[in-house]
Image (cartoon, rainbow, N blue to C red; front, side, top):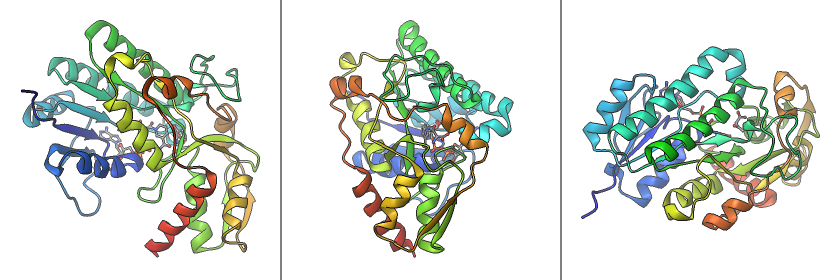
Amino acid sequence: MEPREMILVLGANGQIGTELVTALRAKYSSDQVIASDIRPAIGSQDGPFEILDIMDAVAVENSLKKHQITQIYHLAAILSATGEKNPRMAWQVNMDGLLNILEASVKLSVKKVFWPSSIAVFGKHSKKRLTPQYAITDPDTIYGISKLAGERWCNYYYRTRGLDVRSLRYPGLISYVGKPGGGTTDYAVEIFYEALQNGTYTCFLKEDQRLPMMYMPDAIKATIQLMDADADKLRIRSSYNVSSLSFSPAELAKKIQGHLPKLSVDYAPDFRQQIAETWPDSIDDNYARIDWDWNPDYDLSTMVIDMLENIGKKG
Ligand code: NAD
Ligand code: AKB
């Protein structure tokens, strides 16, 4: 008989983790999903939580043994904007942290590992529009460099150690549950809170800076769909391009103004503008669509309506 799945989510207090843990607990059961983070649990917990630092390889191994973990979702990382403020720290957490997880997973026979990459692996020489899976990847940020190296390590562990590691290059993620954690795409969440609370927003990117984005329910759907896919259908063991929305701050503001006509937005680009300029406008995710039937549910209009409704309900 197959062992009962036991799932460890690392970095569970973050923007993605808070929603992924809920989705996994709905799919499995609460006691099968161990949430963990370097910071104490946020809010009320409906299942097990433990403090775990991915830099502590021994603690990671002990946790895998204690809970007899069969699947890992490794979400702990330093994102692009925070990474530029402390590049050495970002490299250590993103790179050494990943290697600790890959190594412990092989040693303790974890069946599947999910680790997210990012559109940050692309750079200013990558094709801007509908960037293909196999494009020039010359990232400028330490975050993008660590994600690109991470993709190659994942592929290496799959090829040489037989580890079933799966990955997505997430675009900027938009959510109303967890707040974003120090990225270049964070404006696309901040604008909703400011629009509803104050009726004004000053955006840190230029008004026409188009970027690939995705609504969190689609990101959670893609993650679980990829992890459920038959292993022999997956042609990509570095990281899959995955795509849904593409818009600029001005286009997002206009959509929100369709519901909140008094919203006023101005633009004061800071260092994050230079990062955004090196990233694609939009992504070609053909491999994901063919290999594991990827298809997003939300467009810009339905995402905006859902965000306003749910942030509005929070009061
Ligand atoms: P986040 O910053 O919101 O959350 C990261 C979590 O990791 C935080 O709760 C933090 O406390 C935790 N953490 C940091 N250092 C740790 C350590 N040493 N040990 C254990 N936990 C630690 O990030 P997120 O937005 O939830 O992103 C999760 C993953 O998805 C990251 O790998 C990120 O690069 C990737 N990603 C996110 C986006 C996005 O738009 N949110 C886009 C592309 C890729
Ligand atoms: C960031 O802006 O750093 C993230 C990402 C796209 O990886 N949201």
